[in-house]
Length: 119
Image (tube, rainbow, N blue to C red; front, side, top):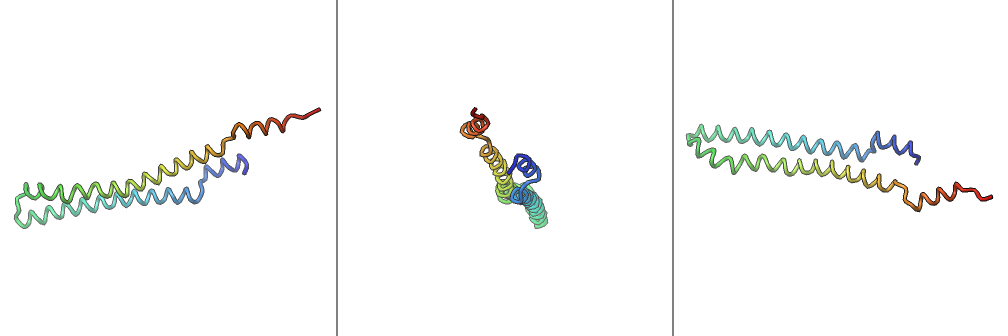
């Protein structure tokens, strides 16, 4: 593969690179959707308990640690973590592939030796 083909391929992205980005975006959207769903569910629970006649201080004191905090941290940790992992795996993969394509000193010696003509 020539240098021009290599650079053009890096700009357009391989199918696996595009799939990785799409999966990272889907995981981030899933985290956001679950976060919104959990907050709405929390508010519904608060309204339900308040409608039943429980004191608001007791309801907030018991429902926040048992429902709101796990509802916030679980989607962020699971799906947000997957999205970040997919993004950073792609960056590490790009750096490793760039490092593998760099010429080594043995490669440069072969190029220099082949360019010298003997009389």
